[in-house]
Length: 542
Image 1: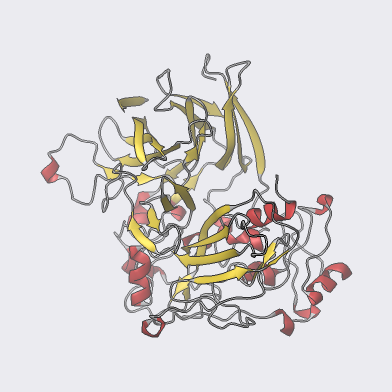
Image 2 (image 1 turned 120 degrees about the vertical axis):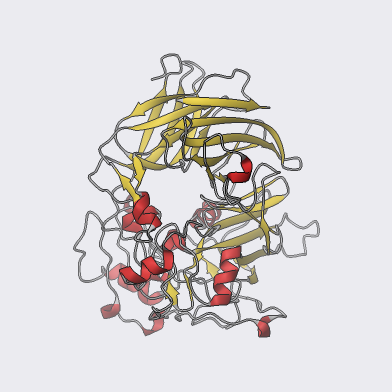
């Protein structure tokens, strides 16, 4: 199955909640917050921790040269009444009650977070208006005192967070970066799926306490869109030019979109328009919207099927594609022929690799461990070529790497587990229907077919720096579907590899993240997420 080649506070709860709020996707700021849930005036969603009442202008010196993209303005809570509010459905409550309970209605009217107990979590109600507002394009709220708070051209905003509930611990200092979809369309046309949104990086800087006790400790907020090559080209063209992973794509030249606004429901192009605009275009847009890491003097915005983009650690301005210390090739697709063909006969755009959006940090060595992948199309090694690399934080230098080919693997895994000597990857039961994708009938994700009743495999690889190298092996896991691991370790008593992952139980669903489509994810369709514990015995490989 494998072929290998080797080259060698203490902090307050509220503060922690502020960090939890700024998670990978903006949905985390909306579930229980009533009001302008994407408002940059404050970081007060889900649990009030840090918020600003004073903001500075975000307009730049080149503002007059910029063209403002079309967008729909946000709405303000002051224009709404109880009759305007709709309680959203969930999987267990598909038909929600028609009216808000009195305490929630009062919370909406006063724009204050309701009092909740730990037992309430997961059983609450949410407003469709709030949930949709959380998925609006990142822009200045309509009720902001500063109309130039967020630059619509590049998403730049900068201001002081000068009102803090509680006290910042003296040992809480540093810079927090968060990345996720933040720009949900171009030219008044919304993306087909929220995960096709362009990356938005936010930065919260918490300095150490000043030596002079009379000086104020200033916490600052800064934001920018990740200006990838595709982002810039589409901004200039004022329309979609590239295919997105989850179905967004260019239309035919004869098909003018309705341009209802990026904060309105997406419009579906006709089949003819979709084929004419996307057929045989295999270069998927790099949204740089999945993860951000700060390591080795670099800040990198990561994407599942492309190269990382480096951004300035301070200003967040986009620097450009990054080759991860020379381990990646710029400008090439992550596809290899897999046959013994002279190099001059191989298309120049093939032979590259994409890097995972979820590398891991080793707590013992301080090194980062990740992997890059290439699809092997033909030959005895048809499958997925994976190269695992460990980097030192000193200059982002590669310390060691291992390369393996997993036969029959059609799709790159999304996440990994790192232990003292092993790397675990879980491969879901997915297959790619290439014909509808190549013809432009479906996007890449929609062309994936899932067998929710089939067993899945977990692959175990040696870490490149492990003292004992071994032949990789796989174990079969009962049917489920997962994307992310929590953590893993090697049990000191048994020697077994223990890991935890989240996902969905067996089902008859054939769609990959289909419930996340449309304007925003639909809680009524998303199945319950479970946490699984997986224990592997290396001695029996079971």
